[in-house]
Image (cartoon, helix red, strand yellow):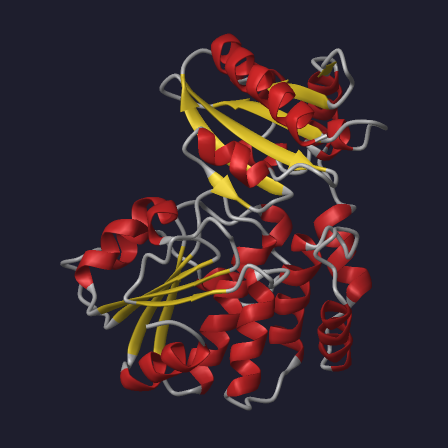
Length: 326
């Protein structure tokens, strides 16, 4: 079953819901799961937002943020039972430790806007044309005719603003501005949300930024640029792993660069690779070649190997990919 009508039938049918987001969550998936939690509460349902990763300190301004718990709090065998799992902003497989919860519920609902999502639920609503998962949740709230308040308006505005790059990316449509206007009228504060997401950084983040920019490289044709983030850098600067969020924007802003890449060293000989493109390159197709996925302008994958080996393989393919589509 697919589409908003199928999702609404399932919500009407069941009484209790787990709501999960993808690993390494961003403001879109966090704002979306909390907004969906808000909606289900107003529909008289029991709901619980779940995340593989802890919520970041800079998201403390988001209403309801304290409601998010780890998957271990709702694991099979706990005192509560659940009818449905709703995976938001990703397929179920990308929810990390929350993924096994899909086997403990009666139905899985999948709500997403990534073109690479195959539809991993019993009920799927995947809209690649949507700018953000927050836009889809907004449409669901509208369909239920539940009046917006300042809390849910803040959550949805943060979600949509973040996934449109503060309304700068190519997914920023006229409808996005219409929705944003309604959210502001309902009580969202663009100045506060923007300041908290974009303009508040720790001393360790700025120090880390300096270290990462020292690794900046560019291909001979100038179309691909990339940076590295090692575990040693994080330790030496006293930075958190989540503080790598947004670093990829710096190679992307270089004139002439079509594909920007960040290589982030993880544990267990794994490298997280993030891709961003400016205009002409569909980096979701590039990520899929390495077992990942995402959007045409923002995607990623995780590879096993040394940093040097992964960098060599990915950059070589990215350069060829960028040249092929030019």
